[in-house]
Image (tube, rainbow, N blue to C red; front, side, top):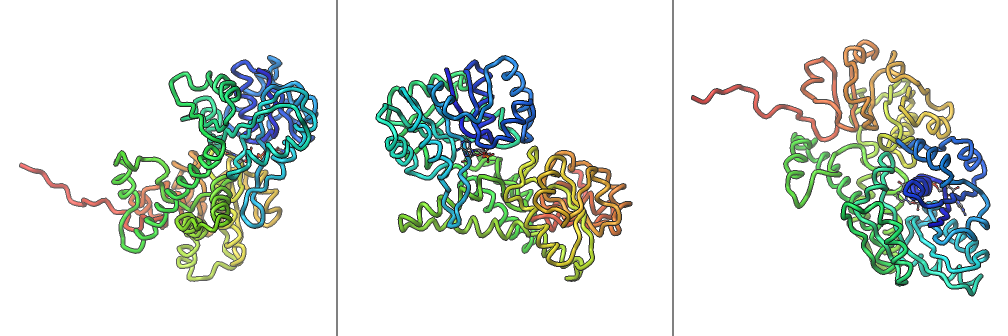
Length: 446
Ligand code: NAD
């Protein structure tokens, strides 16, 4: 099939490369000329494991091309996928400017039947808006499909190649069949392709992200309660995660969710409901809890240093909003760093992939270190904000040696409190203040 994918970001680039990898001819279009030039030189503008290989392979085999020439791409494609950004507007609603720009271009340039697929995360009713926009400029027939994307940054290729499900929102029978065919190579193990109406498809995406955000805020609130009553959130997690109705995923306590999706999608669905004069009370609370959670370590740090952080230097490991990505959009590390700087502290930061992004965001306000241990030298403490695998088993003797005083503030609960205690490291984490083994005495039953 001939496809055009508008937007070569996390979603568009992954979708374009994966559709090409199963044999389709894909033209990726972006308005960012620099990005397209880099892609044409074989340089991948984002860090996503495995993406470089699949892009290079499909470019070499001439199934994947990159261009800024939208008109040519529209004319050649039967299916046009919109995967442009939908950033939050000032009032929290999703800004549809880029989506409608593409719709307008399609309307102005299409000469035959097109299937216009919206993969960007958009509020209920956007398929209607896209239809209206295209119709303003053409009398040629077309179909609009809502096909929300559920990939996770860091695991994007695996998620796209083996999706849990594919959601197709359309009332057009031909479009539904073309979409089923397009996704067939990805659902061969029997994963469902669920065809529904456009509005339900649009809302499905927000419902999924909102429920995941709710799980995270719920567990973070439980963790904070654990700190108050001396219970351990790790035991609670294991205790409830084995209940098949609850499941083991998305119930790890930490310093809150960030990224380009959960925060903006929670705000956007709240706005959608507000516009209908309907209040989403649970999700409003989810957001409040999350904002507080991003700096949950701050009170522990202030208490430890007796409310005087002025002139203190902190090593901070982990800047991206989660591991295996360089994405720092709405990362809890940003809130934490800003709060510490406001209190007069200095930051020595390290991240395996997000250093460029951190340089762009903070400039000279923080010191960046390519090697994780270099950030520790002479620092007053270590703060962990992202659970990168390489932080899970560091050399604790070296950490003790490099820090002025051995103290770790761990926002991702990476280490065992008992182990830290035995090593003589002061250790503060989230919801595990007791951190004790429940049984301290060995008993033999005769
Ligand atoms: P992104 O910001 O990484 O990429 C968007 C791209 O669209 C940019 O390269 C931009 O230059 C380009 N663009 C903007 N206007 C354009 C136009 N008129 N024509 C062509 N290109 C244009 O965004 P992303 O993270 O890929 O997200 C895209 C959409 O997918 C959003 O709605 C997002 O909510 C949704 N989504 C994202 C993820 C994720 O993990 N990032 C997952 C699922 C869904």
